[in-house]
Amino acid sequence: MSGEQGFHIEDWRRIAHIRDREITPNERFWLETIRLASWDSDPAPTLEQVQKLRMIFQTRA
Image 1 (tube, rainbow, N blue to C red):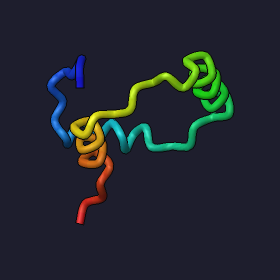
Image 2: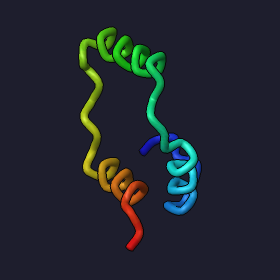
Image 3: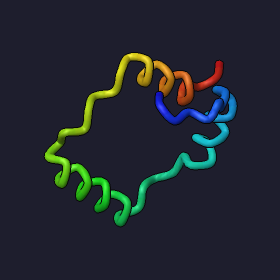
């Protein structure tokens, strides 16, 4: 992903744990507004990005 700051998987897991919460109605509104303004033109994530996200959010055994 572009703009990475050299975080390791454990750093991302800590960040995800802190931020793991339901989004507010206001946040949901802004996400929908941005989606509508972009005409759903956001590019699909790459395989590498999907794999990194899965590594971050996978549960530990």
